[in-house]
Length: 315
Image 1 (tube, rainbow, N blue to C red):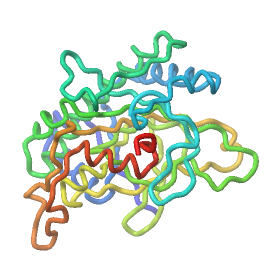
Image 2 (image 1 turned 60 degrees about the vertical axis):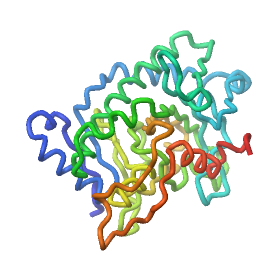
Image 3 (image 1 turned 120 degrees about the vertical axis):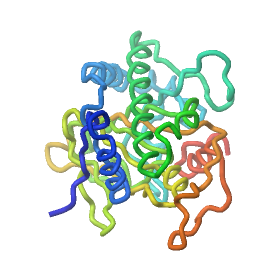
Image 4 (image 1 turned 30 degrees about the vertical axis):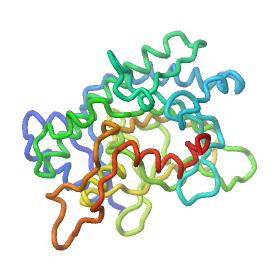
């Protein structure tokens, strides 16, 4: 029987915090993924956000094209045929919309934390998208607190380091598959760029992670659960103590191929000037420092956006 990604109850953070931190740390070291229920984000708020995203993706292609961003895909709309996973030659079968952080007051990084795009055709898009963004941002900080403690750090270690992070809410539409056979997949094998990703799962099956044994393990969508995985920035910060696990979204079989699939990942990033420097506690004789030279979060992001073809306009 294939291993299963653990699902933990966030209520335990109040009743048995040490045990929860231990279980989450073990899950992340083994899988790089962990599910959380009782996370506090209302189902109705999530559904309202899904509703406006579905409305946008149903618009005509020429209307959506007006919102294509030149910011490396970091805000607004990215159409089909653009993003492709590292080491893959064929773009994924998806289109998506990005919502970034809304800056109140003076923007310390005006060339990085750019203003959001909002589709005029859907008047309540902004309010519903930002409501979900803010909830996921807050939840992400709670999860980072658990991860910090599992690494022997203070619970608030990440707080100031992500306060103005270039975090992205991505609403994804995977359309029904074409009748003819295609070599493309909904999302080819990849790892995430950021610190952690919070995934509000689709009702459809398809997400799989690659186990240490080289098996593709399905991540079953459990109602009321948000799956949180480790990204490459966290893997680098922890010297691979916490692995950024390869994952993919496969094309479904049979009648399921005729249905669209939607999902909402939230990519949590550090502040753009945060130096990703290996944590001393993650360096041992058996695990020497793989990254002696630090890199800022924004430089790391720009490198990776070029690899996945989202920054080709600036090359």
